[in-house]
Length: 415
Image 1: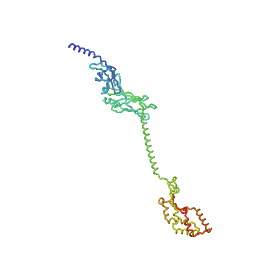
Image 2: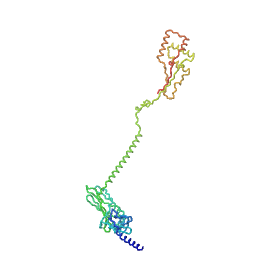
Image 3: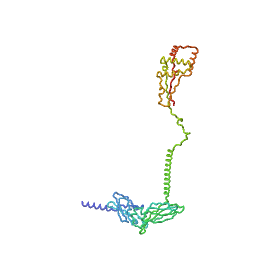
Image 4: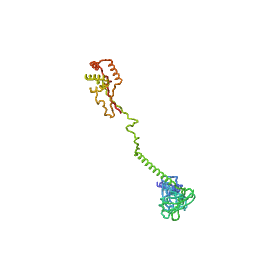
């Protein structure tokens, strides 16, 4: 039993010893930069969930482990002026349990333009603004890179560091200037030749101020004079003019309406003024005309007693002698009052309705009928007919006065 256990342990040692060099190293180990960002990357074909990678930064003498296949070197580069002026490269070793591979080395990288390396890193130029200054000049303004990049600002401690930049026009005319580390903005005034495109390009170098070491700031593309500011000024000026004009027009309209409403109507001469009493309306008000008609019946016109009949006969004799034919009308006009059939107020029932109501009485007897009766009576007298008093009375009693021989009171409204 002891022999078997010893053989098993020996076999395990042999297997583990043989597997030490079996892990493959990472491949394609590189370091790259993108402005301030510095990153190391590699590949590993036999990736295992428990595989780790040891990253050794040679320029910094630092060692770190990660399970990823990339590593950020930016915090190590921008620690100080010395660090960002150094040359960087790394080695990566794969580790699985107690086994590890051979280290794989990367390429070299640096921001220092005076050092040799596989890759030279540069910073991007800050945003630039070119404004027209005068008829043939312009003012170039941009943020100082020592202030624009916060990592660079923290790393730079030297007060003698500065940024040297060059402005080049379209006709290859160059303007050089320096911007100290404590200046927040950098400016340069340039001029253009007649007919030249008002565009410029900029490039520069960041010096540490000690050993004349510097890093390069990448050159910009053509940047032309900004004319949008002038357009904005013109646009806002037009808006202001339109706004003021709108206010003026609104006030003028309000004042005009107010003056028109308060203006008095023009007066006409008295000769041209219309008379309200005689003026006729195009559409006069339609009102109904009311007429009061009072009819006198046959019974009302009869004599109520013998005495009234005698008076009537006496009147007839007098009319025969005088030839007056108006007595009948007068007798009939008064016959209604004896019976109470006619009252003085019988024709004025609607006097309270309108003051313009007038009552007219007219006789319904036609003149022709009375003339015929008069002629008949005259012919009887000429023939010698005698009328006795008793006969006259009998005739008069039998003779009835026609209602049409009596006057009728008709009242109507005149409007």
